[in-house]
Figure 1 (cartoon, rainbow, N blue to C red):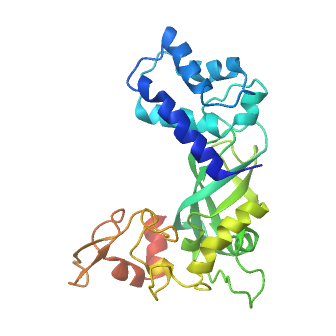
Figure 2: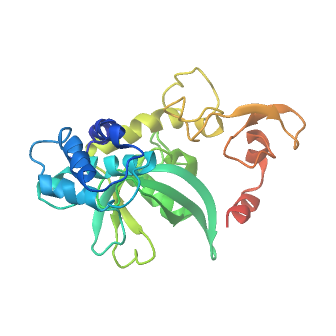
Amino acid sequence: MFSRARILRRRAKLFRALSAYINVDVVGENIVGIADALLAELPPTVVRAAVCDSVRVLAGTHLTQKKAASLAWRLAGNIERLNDGGAVLPWSGQPVNEIVPVCVEKVTPFKNGNKVGYVLHCRAQAGSLCGELFTQFFSSNSLRVIARVVGFSSNSWGPLQYGGVAKHFVNLLFFAHLDADMSRNGPAFHNVSVTPGVLKHNKTLLLVRCQAAPCPEGYQHACANCFKGYDTCSYGVRAQTCVEAHCRTCGQTAFFDPAADGIACINCSRNRSPAATIKEES
């Protein structure tokens, strides 16, 4: 059964186990040492040869912090495969259909031909794609359909109305049904599903974001308009909390998204027309 919390805890343990090998060349006895360090933090059901083969794919390289983090996550999210004796390798293609749990890290407006919609930036939490960030475009109409699957109200009177606020998808979890035929140029999916546990996670976020429950910080504005990011607030819809600076657009001291262009504050950016925003992102 998928548990993101369990995977992240195991990932942290595996990364700590690799700390002694950061900046070490993955060669000779180091391969065995790395594998043994990982095995000490993995369930006893895991096949040793599978872990060794998972490490051996990095042979001849320098184990950077980034590579160690990726290796730890790949193993943490693929325990069943390791139990079956299969090596967990970096993603290089999607030969078969696969259902993988993903978390939406970012949403950006986009125009794909004549279709206006949004790109979901998804991080795979487990499976062959574990730890990888990939994107998927959905038209505005398609995203409304998906919204009802992932936890928004399925009727017009429910408390968790989608209302076209695509930013509310940030940090929601769901299972992406990767389609091998669609994934020739990268991971791709059309269909999504959820489990009761994933649905509970999503609705906990949506209750506050849809203002069906009070903001824990006491703010009255909508989460989509908030200056706080999910680095400091679990209900935030932006990655980083905004910083105060002078806005050249409105001439006021205002909040800026650190990841934005730095020209317009979040209020001025919000007042831009949707068409202009979509054009900039396309």
